[in-house]
Length: 185
Image (cartoon, rainbow, N blue to C red; front, side):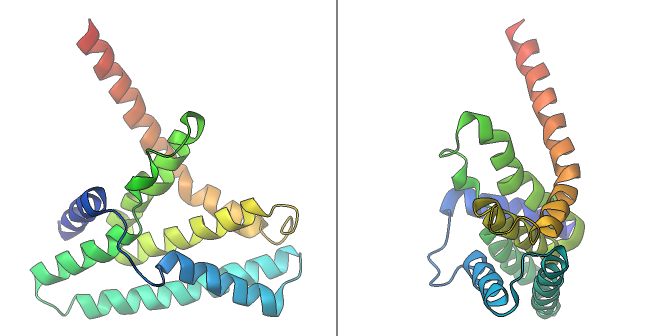
């Protein structure tokens, strides 16, 4: 039940307040860690891409689990609100109005549906790990020629973790379409 409350509050915190003004946003931290790894260990091979993915997921999983373990010792209400505030950082609803028509579905999936899905499924570590994978994928998509082999593991994992959220989004779109059709008749 608390995951549902956390997801509910996180969505509405993001919806009404948007991004909080951080000096260093967690997504920027993820980018810096990837750049650090590339600087020290880059080689355009699948093996190095897998090492980067493992390195990033271990760091992020460890930190997010530590945060969650700290939060669960707090009183339940404070834990829910603090978790919702943290989770809202990884839901980027405000990105939707700026997206183009053809990328709207992918933006909706990556900014709302998948983060909330992983928050509900795996608590704070789920949403943070999802956003790490998504951020890494976006970074590699922007520089495809440089990271052709290096990024394959991240691209594969991103496709895998978005499979179920894509199906959920498709179901919502079909249901909404049918509801609109019934209203018009």
